[in-house]
Amino acid sequence: MLATTALVSLSWVHAIEPKSGYQWLSEEAREMQDDEFANPGYLVVDTGRDYFKKAGDNGKSCASCHGNDGEELNAKSIAMFPKFDEQAQRPITLQGRIHACSREHLGNAPMKYDGKKAIALETFVRNLAKGERVNVNTVGPIAPFVRKGKAYFETRRGQMDMACAHCHVYYVGVRLRAQILSKGQLNGFPTFRLANQRVNGTHSRFRQCENLLRSRYGKAGADEYVNLELYMMSRGNGLKIETPAVRY
Ligand code: HEC
Ligand code: HEC
Image 1 (cartoon, rainbow, N blue to C red):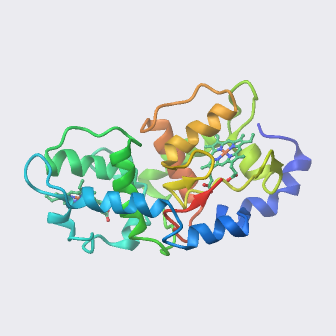
Image 2: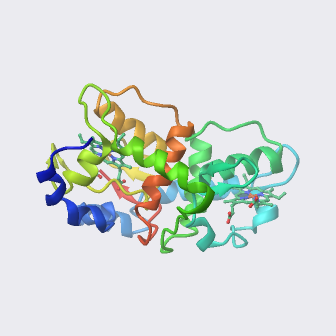
């Protein structure tokens, strides 16, 4: 389905070893990411912390159950999202879990997927696991969803008739306008993008790339994007979480 045999063998080495997008950043962008005072993503971590402590419609806050600064949440467990949700019998993203807690445990009205508030909470929570290694389970009942996500990643789409894999597996390291193609890893998400000057969720980033391909893209939170996030996060197993990362 993908490219030619020559391309496949050339990129075989690329394909097996996960590498963070950090690898392809300029020195300046790396310094910005590494300095909590220079990295604008930390403003969103702070906003998320405020929401975390704020009482919901039933008077409880996230902090009531998970500790004032989230210290009752387990960093290793956060690094395992997306996980299989036994109740729903399908995968759930970290943000999906936060939406569920907000509705069920705070009695709040649903938040918009990848909306400002949900992104702030997700950025705060995932930052608690910064430095932990991505550790997504891909076997057992979750396996068929991983396969669906992989198929999405490898299917040509849009007027450009290209798959995610073309750029993020086969053309890794190639310059596209001002940017160098990375492996499209998710270990830095939500990420602060220099291009749009805000913190972006994974599904919003998927939409931005689909827009580039002139593809009809899905909605943030849609099942296909949950499967895609699951597959893409799992192909980064072993990478350290960098949230909030700085990217182009
Ligand atoms: C009334 C208590 C309660 C409140 C309030 C609450 N949660 Fe939870 N939260 C839970 C329980 C219970 C679980 C475990 C659910 C499960 O695994 O099925 C959970 C799971 C989670 C997880 C996944 C943890 C893991 O390791 O898998 C995250 C992240 C989380 N909550 C974030 C939040 C956020 C953010 C808020 C506020 C919007 C919130 N929670 C509010 C009880 C609560
Ligand atoms: C025509 C080439 C191209 C294709 C095809 C493409 N992207 Fe991208 N993508 C880019 C560029 C350019 C960037 C910014 C530089 C980088 O990190 O690779 C990017 C970045 C990303 C990132 C951010 C990586 C990080 O470290 O923050 C993700 C995630 C991503 N793309 C997902 C996708 C998905 C999902 C698809 C398929 C729907 C896709 N891309 C298809 C060009 C492409």
